[in-house]
Image (cartoon, rainbow, N blue to C red):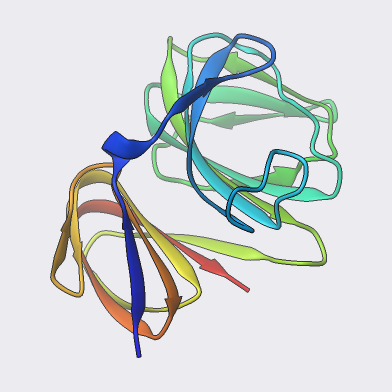
Length: 179
């Protein structure tokens, strides 16, 4: 049996960051209703308007992907990495001291955070049809998509708790496999 929950972008509430450098909109987390300190996993989209320090998340692994904008240079524990290619996931430790420098103005990024030792995530980008087995989260980052023929608009998501679904992307859709 397949268990699908559609999560519409229009239903997300923006929350400001502590440092004022942008806002985040949670797509989904587990356990449901968990805060920023007690989640097993959390997926969000962030509007980044200024560079600056990232919040530290002890015991958390992070994957960040540029969705819109010209990208950023991330300095993670003193090592700078340019993250400018759209839809190319970049993995780093939430324990690390991390700073962001925007390369060309505001951007939108896709964030996946998992509690080390409890959950791991694999993020792949889909541009056509693929089968996905839950637990997983599917997020349309550009264009539109369908999940078992249910339509998803840009930035809509679907949470698949169990079973296998067909994802059909007309654009770029992130598939987050959670184990």
